[in-house]
Image (cartoon, rainbow, N blue to C red; front, side, top):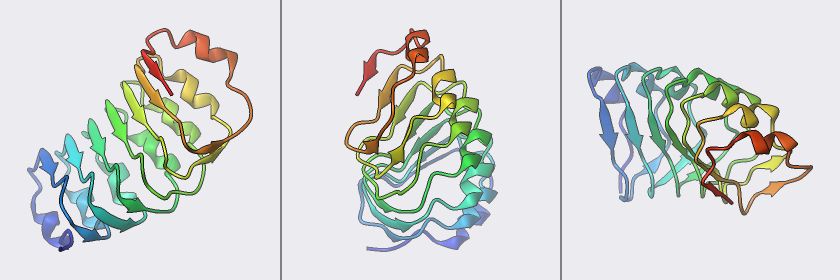
Length: 162
């Protein structure tokens, strides 16, 4: 058992950071924002807690973002829309509270969005329906309400909707 050190700030050339399937705990250090070359970030299946630090949303080269099966809380920031190169976003099986940010629609390269069992609620934002490259959309086991927009029919690339 251990945590992710603030010293990751020194890994400025790091492209691929995977510590998934371990027993790391504690919070994700905001210093991760200094890893400006990161394309792959996988902290899935640990015991990380706290919120997603704002620095994560400054990683403009990030394509694969996996934080599934931790104990993360708080909300998913509207700043998620700054991650315009995202291809996969898996933050399922956490303890968030809040809604899906409308700015998710700015992540036009997104193909896989896994939000199941993550404590989210509210209505599905209009921005969600702007994701024309989306293939997987997992929303199950949350507390969403309202209606699914007729715009869902425009998302013709969807292969898996849960």
